[in-house]
Image (cartoon, rainbow, N blue to C red):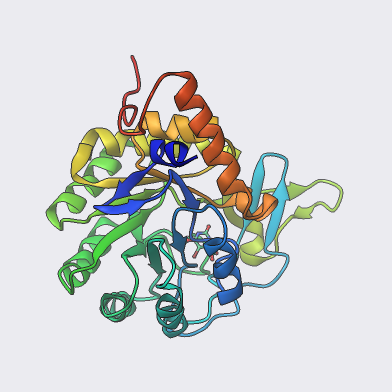
Length: 312
Ligand code: RRO
């Protein structure tokens, strides 16, 4: 058993993760009770729901709908406000798992204020969400390279804790290249690829209406549908940044095979959102166990041996 956990042991920005699989900022990670369920699961980290300065109820319901191969959602950043997550970090510190805050500003000053506050907290890593697609009237920051640079200029170097970026999917390599240049210039420590595929529309033909209510039905697509997009983004960033920057892969991880594919593409850890929402916290143990089985069958002794080693 100890041998088994060792084989998928990994690191993000020098911080040790006991396995290759953890939760993603997203479902079931807003309240202390939900976070405690993650603590008690096999998730190798405790990642918080993206927070804002003030608490938010989020968008109107229905705002999360399961689909045959994933989900569409427009949650609208429901969260308890950043001060609660700073308290949760101190309460959860005693558990031996990395804690990752996720912050989502509504303006640049919000990002600065929250990064500053989490620099002075018990979290291990700060994931800066540049890619929420579900705020009415606001575009995803990660598609605006100038605004992204302004944010980076103001949030990097505010403390010793390492900062990463949660990125939207890119579809043109030139956009990955632009982002990779900023990541290098500002010494970003990790990236998380990808957030949901924003502004998609799912229609119920019986009702002749969108399946979710906010933003006239346009929301973030998640799960299996987006895995090839996520893999491509992990791969392109891995090739651009190699071992200078750690990569969380996220988007459609529901099995050990999926996790193995992300590992081949260059991920250091995979995050699980849609499958966690559907299956509950037991998914982390199952997916990591399936990954261990694949690695053992193929004769690998560590994830490091496989990372990025996609064959051509
Ligand atoms: O809360 C949301 O609607 C949400 C966020 Br913050 C995000 O980053 N990505 C997403 O798909 N939904």
